[in-house]
Length: 124
Image (cartoon, one colour):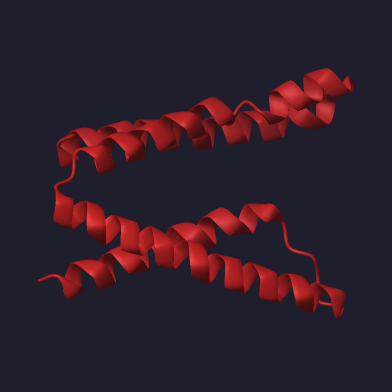
């Protein structure tokens, strides 16, 4: 997928995600039924799937070197995320405040981006 097309697809999916999070967060407190609360809480998921599909399509369109860079970046992000979240989980048992699972994706995304930058530099 050309970079401009990926950027547009990802930006549209991210915008839909942000909008659906805002809408679901607004309406969730007004709902009483557990089923309706669950359905509204899950409204961001289709946009998340669209983001995932855009990323998968982009990675599939890369050449072998760039795929290798992405694989190494994702592997590094996965390992470091596991180490950091597990370590913090142990610290929670020592009394530190509990963190939301929503913290995992931003951490992994930032580490993936950093790994991509380091990988791209490595193969210059």
